[in-house]
Image 1 (tube, rainbow, N blue to C red):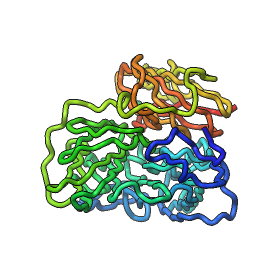
Image 2: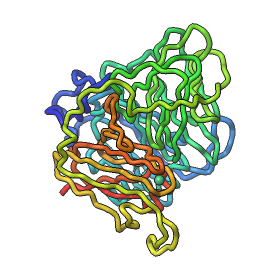
Image 3: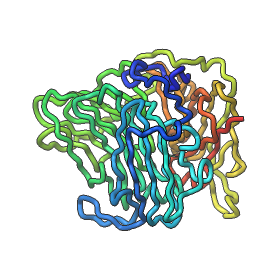
Image 4: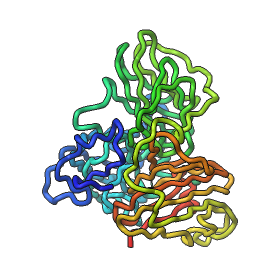
Length: 431
Ligand code: C2O
Ligand code: CU
C-alpha cells in the first residue's frame, strides 16, 4: 500500500522501518526547484577501458569507468542524476532497476522517454523512498549496453545509517567472458575486523542466475531485491541463487580467524577481512526462499484479486520484425502480438507465470514489487518474498501478486537481455 507518507510499505522487515519513512514525501511528484540531497553527474561514453587487472575491454563507461560510481542515498532523500551522453552513438538512458520510481523517471527508452543522443542530457529526480540494494543501467539497446558495462550500483540506507559495521557492494559483471566483482577480475576485498557485522550487497548484473556460497561464517539472507526478509534464519553450507538482475543482501559476523569468503559463482569472490582462503566446493543444498524466514502480513489480500493474468513463456518459429527465426513467445504470441496487462490504480493483481520454453528466464517487472505466492502449486510458507527479478526455470510455474500502486506504462520482460531483444517483453499499463 502507498501509505499516507507516500511510502511503499511492503510489510516492514529489518529494512523497512516505517519510523524512518520521510514525512510528507509524495512518491509520485518531485516539486520543481526542490534542492536534491544527492547530486550526481554521469557521463556515458562508448570506448575502450582497462580493468584493474590490466585487461582491455571494448564497451561503455560512466565517468570513465565501468561499473559506474556507487550512488548512495539515505531513506527519504531526493536523488538527482544528470546523465550526459558524451559518445554513445545509439543513445542512452538510465533505468533504476528495482526502484519503483514514478513512470517518467523509469528510463525505459521508447516507453517512458526517448534515448538521449550524443551531446544530449537528461535529468532524473526521484525520492529514495525504498531502503535497499538496487542498480542502474542503460535501457537503450540494453542487451549490448548492459553487457558492455553501462551500469552501476545504487544503495539506499536507512536514515539512521547502514545496518551493519561494514556495508559493501559486490556487483558482479562479465566483461568479455571474464567475471568481475566491482570491476576487479576474480577477487575483490573489503576490510573488516573480527567481530564486525557485515552486510554484503550482491548485485547480479549478468544474464544468468548466479550461485553464491559462503566460506568461514554462518550467514543470513537479510534482503532480496531491496526488501528485508522477516526473521531470516542463520544458515551454512547452502547455495543461494541470485537471479539475473536480482540482488541478495547477506549478513554475517567476521570470525576471530581468517577472512570470510563470499563465492560469487565458481570464478569470483569477495574476501571480507584479513588473509586469504580458497573456495570450498559449492554446497549441493539450495536455499529455498519459498520457505525461508517467518511469515508476516503483506498488506493486501492476494486471495481477492481485482485482476488475474497469465504470463506464459514459450518458443516457436516465426517472424519478429520481419526477421525469420525461432523466437520467445508470451501467451503464444510473438512480439508485438503480446499482452498489455491493463490495470487500474489500486488493483490487486495476481499473475501466473509459466515457462515451457526450454530455458530459464529471469522475469523483471518495472515499477512494482510482487510477492511470491507459490511455485509449482506449493504455497510459500516463509517470509514474504518480494521480488522485482524472478528466475523462472524451464517447466516452472510461479504465482505472484502485487498492488497496482504506481501509474504508468511498465515493462515486464526477461532480464537475460538478449531474450528481451528476441521478443520476451510485455507491458503493464494503467487504464
Ligand atoms: Cu534492469 Cu527493464 O531492466
Ligand atoms: Cu529469458
